[in-house]
Length: 383
Image (cartoon, rainbow, N blue to C red; front, side, top):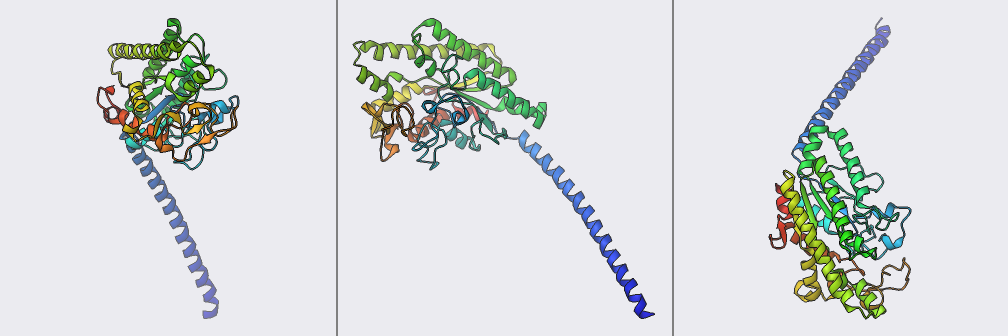
């Protein structure tokens, strides 16, 4: 009898083991479900307490590589080849410099993750913000059409992001995130460079008018804190100086006085418009960085800021290395490359080096009201 009972006892122990495993599995599933719910609740709490996100619009000064993904553009509007990116990323990213651009440094100062190009495949995380900027873009749709992402299209991309945030977070939390976020914009210079009408008052009014419409649209979605920069004295950048040297124009005033006056009139008009918006839009607040003065001072006094030269580019060809040939992937294939980009204010024929971007971003972040007013970016992020 004892021998027959053994199998029965074994079966009993086996059944008990199965019951224990089943109970443990159910317990683990319940525990996993509880942990998931707690994590989701904690994530939601973190979102509510999240620092301000950063949404970026503009041109090549802020483009992190969106133009990499435009099939209709050409290499004149791209920087996804060596030696771009060599000083920081060790490979080209599409940024028009040797390393980081201004929004990258602002992310660092604000404690945000590095924001990738909006068009980068697989980029669907927007809690830290999004970057829609496109090299060559303007405030007007007719500026470099088909080759860049104009400001109105960038606005539509932003609206798509707001819809996704509302689906992810719910209307209330998404609205809270959008209202405490900062909106950086660098636009305008390409609108003047791409047309012969650049010196007309009507053309300037169209640029300011379209920029204002975009600002009001962002404001309607909940945006309240904005960052702007004056456009620089582009008559003094290497590309324009090289053109002047090659053309040997007799119209010296066009390359100096006319272009300088055009830039100053634009910057003044933007400043006046921002004052009006601040008065008429409740809660509208902004930072307006004097990029013109800060950059011009570095061109005139490079050694004061640690640069070897302020009028020539690190990468390019021709006079001042001002021909847009950096990397040899554009119309002109031959180019020269300096040994140390940190010694140069310009990396290529028209864009600041990473060293310059770092200095300028620090001024934007913590500069006094005489440099960036009426608020600096640090105060906007903390408010």
